[in-house]
Length: 413
Image (cartoon, rainbow, N blue to C red; front, side, top):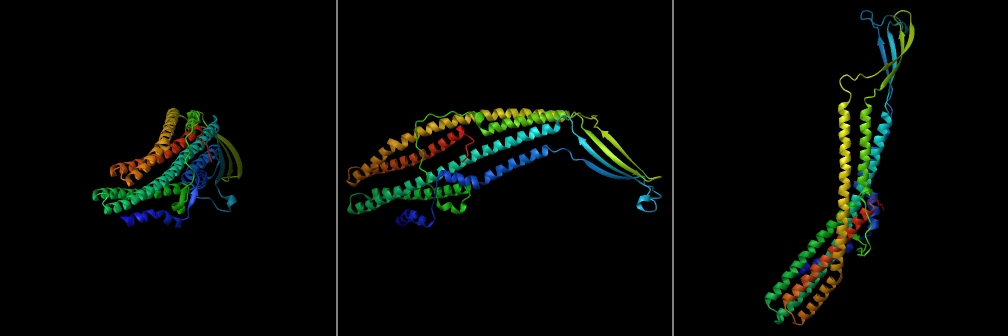
């Protein structure tokens, strides 16, 4: 057991062989913007929507056709050179002329979808930034818990060593020594668990910033944010990018609805043709033509009904997202106030009291003034309070980061 504990306590020295990379939150954000894969994927949606705008603004291409007519089944093309062949050749060019403002409506809808895609990128960026902050503070918390676990294990090791000496001298019973060694074993197991959580936190942050090769050396270097009494600023759901994106989706659905109605306005197909007739005397002629669709079987009633349904869906989704955003703002505000209050209680006088009681208990036990039970209770209380205080700092840091993103949801580094 002593060899295992000794090896665990030497882990900080072994880690010196791994190059350490202290990382501030600002530096982590800079690397995240440059390397994060999820952001790159979200940006491709904007590129696709931008291409859709170009597509929507394009007019129909003209069509050209070449036809050969009046070929005799018995004589074929006829004898002689090409100019003497008995056949008609028709070269025709056709162009669709859109009516009813269809191109403008396509452009309006595509531009609204592009604006929505950009806002959804802002929303995705905000969500990924929240994930980054959570991962950074999780690493910071893992570092603190690792330190607490190692210091606690060292304290229990010293207590167990002293207990063995006192047991040999007859000052304590073998049962008391066993209790000391049991708590020492628990502290050793806590160190191993803290080490595993620390490695996991390093790997999570490394993935987000694209630094997997340096994961083992990552160190969260920023201090914990302190709790203050500043009043909380106001946050409104309409400023959130996902709510604005939903509003743009409504505008795009309105354009699609109007476009569906314009399909009842007939487009024209204008044609021009040049004909060369070689049946008798060679003659050249030209002609023009216009064609329009006949609305016999339907007048796009289904397309119009579908567009109306899509518009109503977009409106409901906009209202839904706005209501959810208002709820998230209220939850974030409440979480921040609760985390701030908990941090003040745990990281202030309560932690100081627990440390003072633990020191007094160690001294009193060494002089035989208190029993082993009181000593172990004081140690466990101190360990729990230190762990709770570290968790409270992390909870407050995350809540503060979340609240700041509610105030300025498009804040970018």
